[in-house]
Amino acid sequence: MLLAIDAGNTNVVFAVHDGSRWRGRWRIATQAERTSDEYAVWLLQLMQMAGLRPVQITRCVIGTVVPAALYNLRRLCRDWFGAEPLVARATLDWGFAIRVDSPQDVGADRLLNALAAHTLYGGPLVVIDFGTATTFDVVDGAGDYHGGVIAPGINLSIEALHRAAARLPRIGIGRPQAAIGRNTVAAMQSGIYWGYVGLIEGIVARIRAEVGEPLKVIGTGGLAPLFAEATAVIERIDQDITLEGLRLLAGRNPAPQLPSRSRAELD
Image (cartoon, rainbow, N blue to C red; front, side):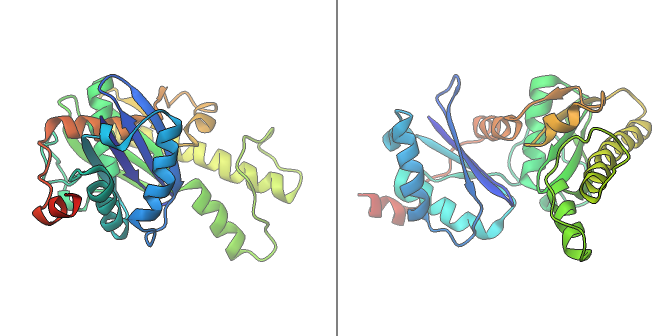
């Protein structure tokens, strides 16, 4: 079985695939200082509840945009599952060209989304990921990655508005009943929600104009369904797209060898 680890700025998602389906998905808040043993205590209990044992894990793959978290996630794979993880990097075999100025600077999550989206849905397309940042990634008909757009995430914007304006409260995100807010909270919710709908529609329209051909638009991330309610631009929601990218990447690349020191420790 494959253990896929998607380490984002806000959460780390662990998922196990048995070759035909995902057997479990679990998430924990991202803390770069969290040790491999702390991960193991938490993860192994959840796996046991799902009827899974560490010995069943034969491969591990990690995608992370938090470099400081990589060391302990790698130790988790080595020490508790006896596997050297494949780490998503631009230098691996992705099956497509990365047509940007500095491929090594592209976040692993963006490349993973591009890989899975084109494999599952064909192209050309745009993947919109509603994470800590809201990203738009462009993939052509052949599957090549052409870069995209990075905008502040919705929750970042809400927090910045609260912190920068002394009299504005911290609010939750939701679809307001009307564009014109009759009180401060309603006005803020309208600005955030309809502002992001406008951002989505405006950026996708500009990307389509630059590409010069129709583009499918795939949404992912926790807030994707909320915004898909308000715009026809987002054609499909796929919450597993980054995990699918990790699974596909592992299938395209050989498993790294466990360092000799780790093998000795396991013995």
